[in-house]
Amino acid sequence: MKATNVLMAGFGGQGMLLAGKVLAQAAMAKGLQVSWLPSYGPEMRGGTANVIVCISKDPIASPLVSRPDALLAMNLPSLDRFEKSVVPGGTIVVNGTLIARESSRADCRVVRVDTRALAQAAGNERAVNFVMLGAYVGATGVLPAETVEEAIADEFREGKEKHIESNVAAFRVGLEEGRRAAFASEVHA
Picture: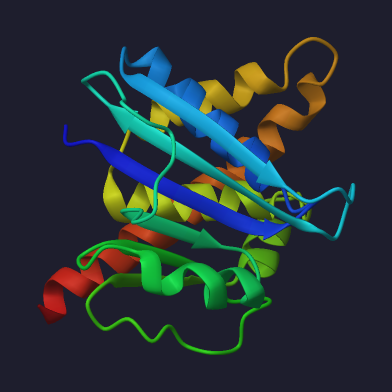
């Protein structure tokens, strides 16, 4: 596996820090080196929030990343701010529910996801973060889906078990959306 740096960004309360934590936990479960670096404004909800997750089989020198391999953008300010920093050939997952504009990056794989509709179809309209995470995993194959599903389940243990099924379902619908996008981009290449 080549080292991968992922930037997940949105408003506070959209769950990007949690999605990043789950991705980091899944990578650790596979024996990989991981760095999880959250950044957020002073607001509890509605302020800016992003997290950088670095995954590598080798030790990670620094958790600071200026050129991520992937961006998961939950809102337009995040796409506007970070889109240009993604490396050519990288992956950009766009929350199509809140972001009307198309990505300006023709040199990246862009996956548009209607997170709200997919989360509702999975039975948990609040699980848009796991829809986005699923789309990323499906488009890139960064980790086995089963490993991420186990990390989601682990996150909701100890009194929160009732949330496992719907959050895993949200991840799975995003996963399929990401796989479809990856297949479509290979067909058109």
